[in-house]
Amino acid sequence: MAQLQVLIIGGGVGGLALAFWLGRLGHSVTVVERFPELRAKGQQIDLRGQGVTVARRMGLLDKIKAARVQEQGFKFVDGSGRTRAFFRFTDTGGKGRQGFTSDYEIMRGDLCRILYDAARESDNVRFVFGTTVDGLEQDEHTDSPVTVRFSSGASEQYDLVVGADGQGSRTRRQLLGLGPGERDPTVRPYGVYAGFFSVASLPSDEPVATGLLAPERRTIMTRVDNPRTTQAYLTVHGENPRAPELADAIARRDVEAQRRAFADIFEGAGWESERLVRALREREPEADDFYATDVCNVQGRSWTKGRITLLGDAGYSAATLSGFGTSGALIGAYVLAGEILRHTAGPSAANGGGKGGVDIVGALRAYDAKLRPLIEIAQAISPWIFKVPMQKSAWTITLTFWLVGIISLLRIDKLLQMLGTDGKPWDLPEYAELESLKA
Image: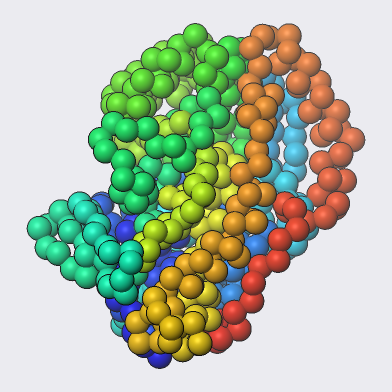
């Protein structure tokens, strides 16, 4: 098999999964990550639907199971901390419709470490940390490689470049030819802002995801994954009077201003709000992992330009809170690697766009064609999905608690779980040759 020189920009879930597959295919893979080391941090994520199937085909599902967060369910509380509804976790074995707490809840850092270790089993994969890409140059009309300029001053050529650098992808901006400050037309905001960080655990913290609905369209959620820290999730709708201040801080990437804005917005929200606000205001060490973002999706007419393509949130983010990001990245990496394999040494590879029998352009077209139907399903999220639980007044919150209380009491959520599988029908392609490969 011909060996491609592949550059993957970003060492997150999607980039690591693609490095895993392409290394086993015998290609020379370089992964560049802007952080000085593997970014094995982040909040709780989950695998659902075909994402579980891909992890199984990678041979990593047992390791993921062993690292699962033992979350026992999800509950709503009111401002005084009283439980208003509880949805208990039921293990479905990854089959059928899952509840809020999935069968495969795992910390982002743990999943990245599993994928990183698996990718490094191949001698064909190398990692370069503390480096960014400053420029990409290619001639789309000729069968020539991509010239990449790095922050180190070095310049290299690659047969394929994959941007797996997240929702705020610099690769995507370069692909679109956007200058500094230019609006990215592929980003579709939902008018919701989210902040994530950790706080020191208390003895009273339970292994249950706990959510509060607060007036002025605010929500708080906490989750416990270890004895030392508790995860905090703050979300606020753009209709909140203080939201413009937060939106401006996020747009300017001013982390200190983001902290202050979240603290101001959630002051007096009830339940655990004072504990969380204090962690932000006093810069408690556990909260150093603070991260804020606007909730949006990324919808581009194409993820590819010549020999450069996008993977995961960089190309097709469904929404920060959709629960699809991790599975989408794993599925995308699997389909991209599978199509590269299928377009190796075939008739189209011999007729252009390929190197040594690999039709790169054809593989990228097939990657888009195969994956796009799933992405369109995942991105069909109405803004009302976020607005409904983010109520403006206390009385509408009381009504919401009454409704979810009935659902919990009558176990309607269990009935919904039995009706079908996660998401709408989409058949995950099978690449038998890919799954049989060894490091």
